[in-house]
Image (cartoon, rainbow, N blue to C red; front, side):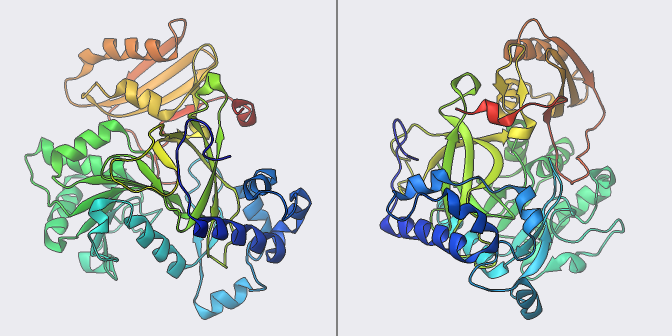
Length: 436
C-alpha cells in the first residue's frame, strides 16, 4: 500500500475513482496496454493490488508504440494533429534518447493550474500570469545563435529570456540584456532552470546589479543545487518553489511555502517503490506516475527515473492534506554514484556535502571506477584554498579508501540536451538490484 507504515497521506474518493478510470481506460481502449491485460488480477481485486501487478511504462515502450499506442477511446493521433488539439513535442534526452510525445496544451495548462493551488504564493495568483522563462533554448522557447530582439522572444504571455543554444554564448552583454528585460517586462512569475538563473544571479552580485523580483520564482527543468539556491536568494527578493514533472506526465509535485512537495492529486496518481535499506530505503525510492484525464496520452505507471524521499511528517504546516508528501527529489537514478563500499549516493547527497563551500559555483563528479572519483569545480575567484576541505568532504561521503582527483576549471557547460548532469558513474549498474 502506498501510505502504509510510517507515511501519512489522505486520498479522496474522487482520487480513487480517477485511478480506477485511468487503469480501465488504458487496459480497455489504448492499443499498447492490451498486452498488460494478462497482468490484471481483475476488478474484484483491490485497486492498489491491480496497479502493483502492472509493469512500469518506460520511454522505450513509448518510442515503440508511437504515435497511437497510448491514445485512448479510438481516437487517432492523425486527427488530433490535423485539428490542432495536439502537437508533437520532444523530451530533452538528458540521460537517454529523446522521445516524441503527443502534446495536449489544454490538458497541460490545466495540470499546471492545479499545481499552483499547492503553493501559497501561486495560489494567490490568477492562472495564467505574465511570465518570463530562463532555460535552455533546446528545451523551451526559440533557439537562435543570433541576438533576437525582445519582441521576437515574447509568445503570448511569456518572455523567453534566452535564445542561445549553449551558455558559452552568455557574455556580459547577454546578462545585461536579461536584467534589463526583466525590469521592462516585469513578470509576475519567473520560471527558470536553477543553474541558469544562478549564473544571472552571480553576475548581478559580482557587479553590484539589482534584479527585478517577481511575485514568485518557480524552479524547474533540473535538480536545484543548494549552491544555486543560495546564489538566487542573494540576488532576488522573491520566494522560490520547485515544480516537478515531465513532458510525459505534466505537473506531478509542487513545493509548498513550507518547503515540502505535494502530489498534484487532481491530475496524477503516484506509486512509490522503495530502495533497499542499504541504498537509502524505505524513505528513498522511485515513483511511477499515472496521469488522469488526457485522452491523447494514457500514461500508466510511468517510470520518472528520479529518486524521491518521502516525508515522515503526519501533516504539512501549510495545511494541504491530500496526496503523497515528499521531502525532496534527490536526483535521477541514472545519475547515482556509489561509496567505496557500494552503497548508493544521490546527487542531493553530494550536493549537501558541498553546500558549505560558498566558493563553489558549479561542479561535476564522475565516478571513474568502484573507488575512483573525479570532481570538476568551477570556483569563485581566489578560492583555491578550499580544495583541501572539499577533498575531506568527499572522503567523508564516499569512503576514506577512495582515490579522489579534484580539478579547478574555468567553467562547466551543459550536456548536449541543454541540461546539466552533475553526477554519474562511468560504469554500468543494475538499477533493479537497488530496490527492495
